[in-house]
Each structure stands twice: as C-alpha cells, then as structure tokens.
Length: 198
Image 1 (cartoon, helix red, strand yellow):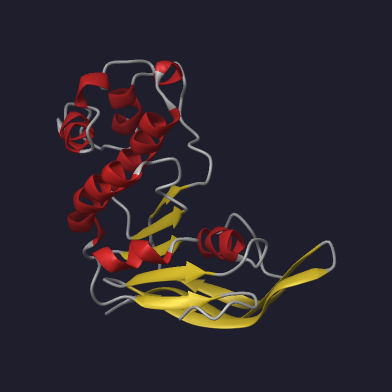
Image 2 (cartoon, one colour; image 1 turned 180 degrees about the vertical axis):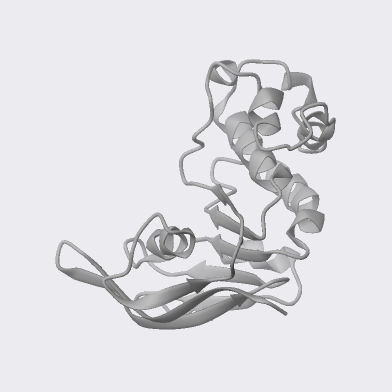
C-alpha cells in the first residue's frame, strides 16, 4: 500500500495551546482511520494539516506526489445559488456524467437534485456536501463530522451509500460518535488530546 500522507513528529499550537505534540503517522491508501478526541484536541487541525490548509510549527508532512484530496468540512461550503446536482458536478471531470443525480438519489434526495441549495434543509445540504466529496476523483478523503445533522435512519442509509466510495482511498474520519465505527470492518483509531480512543 502507498503512504499517501505521512506526519513526522508534527507539532501544532494555537494561542499557546499545543494541540499536536510530536504526532507521527502514515495514512495509507485503502485504509480507514477514525480520529477521536474531546473538543479542541486537534482533530480538525489534523485534517487541515494533512491537505496543507495548515502548516506545522514543528516536524514535517510528506505527501505522495500528485495526491488528490476531497474534504467534507464541518460547514457544508456549498454554492448556495447552484442546484444540488450542479454542486456535485463541479468536481466531476465529465460534465455530462449522471453520477451527481445517481448519488443524490441513493442518498435519499434525488427529488431535490435540481433545487437550489439555498432552499434545502440542513440535512439535505449535508448530503449534497457528502455527495460532492464522494464524487471527486481523490486519493485522500477527509471527513470532519460528516454525519452531523442527520437522523438515525438517514445516517444508516448514508453510511451504506458511502462504503463503496471509500475503497482505494485513505480515509480520515473525525467523529465524536463511536457508533459510526460499527458499520465498518478493518479500521484504525487514533486518539488525540486526552481521550483514550478505545
């Protein structure tokens, strides 16, 4: 397996608080890693460092040449005036692809694919953001609390839709909900901050 992103003794602080202190880990292609810890412990920072949105204060991060990232942020970060399908199509190399509509259908919002995002509910917007990240041709998928705002039944549906799209990528999944792990086999868990991940 390829090491797509490798942290080498990374140190990162904010306002005098050290959130990562000598963190080292290689994220390999084809692996799913859950990142857990209390609020403010550095989970989101780890994702932002992985893709270069933050720079370490110490240590270094190696990325495989040409590695591509897709990201579900805590905020949906959608183009509000575009339709749900158009938001997903932004990351598709084939502008005529039916993948956006197919993904939205499978996520339970196919009837909203032509609706402007600004008219969607919070849970619908979340599923559009997920669809966009899954549709992107990425090597590393960064998921920051990706199921926030979804009810139990919807969460189960979304998890089933996501599974085939995780294969062959390095997936870094930040969560506060350990139940999300139960849908998967063969994953790693990294605890940051003072929380024991197990």
